[in-house]
Amino acid sequence: MKKILSFLLLAVSTYLPISQSIASSHREAPLISNDPLADNTDVYAFKSPTDAEKIVLIANYIPFEDPNGGPNWYSFGENIRYEIHVKNNPNTPGDDITYRFTFKLINEDPTTFFNIRLGKQNQKNTYTCERSIDGGRTFQTIVMNGVVPPANIGPRSIENGTVGLGAPSYNALATRAITTASTGERVFCGPTDDPFFVDLGGAFDLGGFRRPGRDAVAKYNCHAIAIEVPVSTLQKDRKTVAQATNILDPDFVIGVWASSSRRQITTLFNGGDVGSDGGWVQVSRLGMPLTNEAVIPIGQKDKWNAVTPYGGNDLQFAKYFTNPELALYMRAWLPCGFRLNRWVRSIFGMANRGFRVCGIPQR
Image 1 (cartoon, helix red, strand yellow):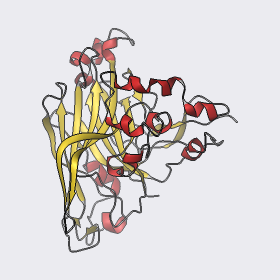
Image 2 (cartoon, helix red, strand yellow):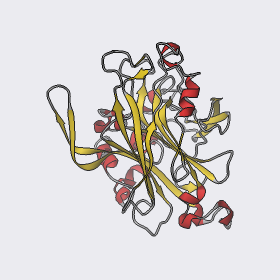
Image 3 (cartoon, helix red, strand yellow):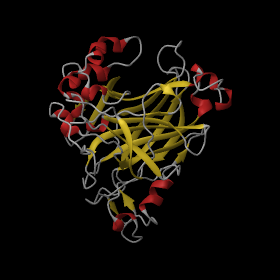
Image 4 (cartoon, helix red, strand yellow):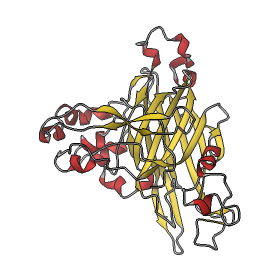
């Protein structure tokens, strides 16, 4: 497998005091399974291991990307809003902070079938990042023309100075794509190795988990949106870490979830052109791990993706949490834990080892 990038991922759960969170969901609902570019796969939030005043937020999209999937490699989609949502005040409705990403595709040389040739790139992804800190009423552009690194096609395309891009290495090319926003956040958008660990084959075979578990997403990529954010930006009343009274200070609890939205109307024209019109509709969301994938029944999955977690929307799904179907079919469950899986390299140079999630039953 051509490894694009790896992340340091310290995983526990969403809606915890500022520490770590995880989520995972691959092709979890009927409608979104037909729209992979808009499909959330994971959400992570964790404290930077090198800077106590920084939090890293990661939202991954596009499940089961084959790294060899050319000549049309996977990319973030146009006419999609990718958003990371942060809740820091229980007394306000909806989001308190939202990061919104929109992407464009550019063909620099449409006369060739190659993705990269003679220093030019086709399907070149660029992005705009906007931030709202007033509950979504207004958005400020904080990154314009951000660059998404291409797929790691091979050394001739990436490193050769005559026929390719002439980069020193793929890692150097990806590192150059890290952008500092006008408001101080550091941002990376691009293809990565899928970091999650889950035995999907066992889960969907009526809970017949295998021992040891088999990593169903090994050797697949996804596309990541990663933001390194100052704690004071995310906290209620913009407090710093030093202002916490203790580790249970409620002002130092945030909720993190991610979503994608599309326009209501898609029109296909002769010649391959596509038009998008109408209002924006949420088509995917992800917060708690594996919720829609392994808790919500198939008849409710599309509805789950369409609603936000606010206003008591999730209470209609409560019965599936109190009596989860999967638990009825599993013989014995070893609580989800963590294991050191492999040496990984952080995109922000944070550390050299990370954790991945595993859920392996005792049989």
